[in-house]
Image (cartoon, rainbow, N blue to C red):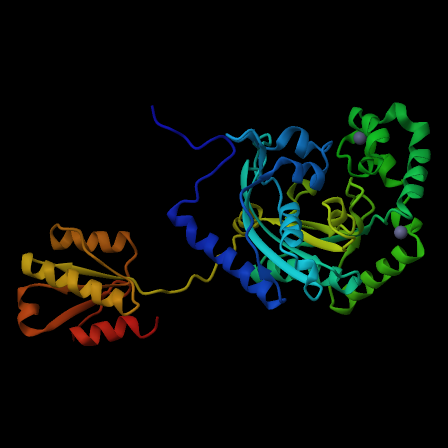
Length: 418
Ligand SMILES: [Zn+2]
Ligand SMILES: [Zn+2]
């Protein structure tokens, strides 16, 4: 019997690692450039954190978490999303006492027991950011700008940005009443999900994907038309901030978040082809969440981006990444004495900061084949004659040119650019 990786998970094989490294390093670079610092939280947390932080009646909590009692009997949950743990860390480490805003980012694995389908994994990686302690809409625009600039820097094209405001506890209840009144005469025509949600979570009727509901969504009342003065001011400020930095956007009434602690801004960035199943980034403001988790009222906003989705879109758009041309030196050897010399030279190159390995113990022709296979850039060839003369041929594998050098020259040559 041969084991397979669990359903809904994938190995990142050696040939895919350069792409992953590139995508992750670009994320770090972009986040630092906007003044964000990295945070890493544990892979599992108390289950209660997520029941509070995501809502215990959501699909995620009801059907998708990996929850288990640990050996002490406490209920633990593998991280299904990045925001709640970072909020927990912010409160636990007293970051609310630091000068605000506090700006954090993370690149971490998440776990959700989802129905496996293309582009959805049960273990997936997320690049996310969170900002705490800033009300002003300039930060909403900055969060969106960071996500956008990052995807743009990777070379992704034809992305679209949609935004909306879902108000806050002072204006949303009135909007929801209005929405219910609008839907009421049409209950018989709604899908089963919407029939249930109209009582539990009416906002979610707006992002229903089922056919019978689409027409009703089209002409549903718009949340941005019913904002209270303070939400309206925030919304207008967000829109003008986005225009100010030249970020094109569409206003989308379907864009909602079902939970009470989400407030005002919501946004998504999607690739050209598909609909919302393929959203690369989703984010928004959550001014009520820190309080929900036991902190004092603190505004917050952030986004989460699936790295698998980013990579899938890079592949779909056939974007090749400029991979760094790093030197990788293989030291080939003919004979026992030469082998000892090769081991020493490879070690010296590494000690000086270069990348080098000793050829496997077989004939020279086979060693050279191996060099091509591992994508070595140069091969140093050592035999008895070379040891005697102190001059070692260096072959460039890209153009097959060969030239001899002294040992010190070789070490300099392969380490000075590192
Ligand atoms: Zn529906
Ligand atoms: Zn409001």
